[in-house]
Length: 409
Image (cartoon, rainbow, N blue to C red; front, side, top):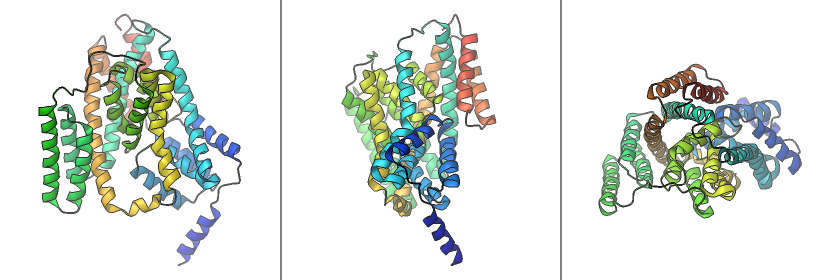
């Protein structure tokens, strides 16, 4: 009883300070300027300053809130900012906190996107550096697949789902078939309804086979790249789709955004990898690479539209369902469905990593040097678990490419 009373008292004492809307925005703008090192470092920063030092929210409630954010799609650190902003100043506060946190990364990526197309890097030392960086980006994604997979693939059924969905991706099966099927199959397995799970899997296979037979012309790849001509609405929808399917971190958005960006001819795989590399050196959620994709597809307005689409779910879940988010933890069937979807996404990322690796192998002047940069980057990521390891890997790979690929890029 005394423990319960103490916890309740602690929760009552954890109250955000009285801030104006402008002060709240500036507070989270500062967090955005310091958001280096990916979601783990960003969440640790929020915990240190707003939980441990300033007591905006109790540690127990923060932990429960973080668990909810990890179940929902979207960048967890950004969603936490929106939620904490609402705790301080209502829905307007949540909106301002989220905008403050994402704004520095968005503006920096917008500036880098503009600069990227103002400099002709083909055949230059800078172009050689970017080839080195692209090899390292493959290592970043491979490391992310392992990191995400070890938290998601916790039983043999989830492993099987990931493998099957990865193979299905290689076969050209659309994700809108594999993801719902994976979620349904796993949820049914958890409920011990194996016959129903078998029927759900058979139905998905039949649908995929039927589409392959009746619509062979619906290939995802196009012959030519036409930059800057995608509609603003299409870019927004593409970003929204990625934002709704981002489970377990921003890396899970890669196959969905690439499917649209490269498949519809907005950009090349090389440019897509460059965008990922640029996002890795910015103080921002990695998902900010969508700004680069939007810029390539539709210029500055396209960048705004795609960024808005990607971040809209992260705003909406907190702004609309603020009082009900913790109830998500109690819906076990939804957990099982989302676990199945997340396992399928791991398979899709793995397949995308192989595809991008093949493309990079074809582009680098020396396959041996490219493999060496990849291996060194991957080893470094495993060996040095620091919030700046991604930045160091990208800078180091760029230097290696500049030294080793000049004259051949």
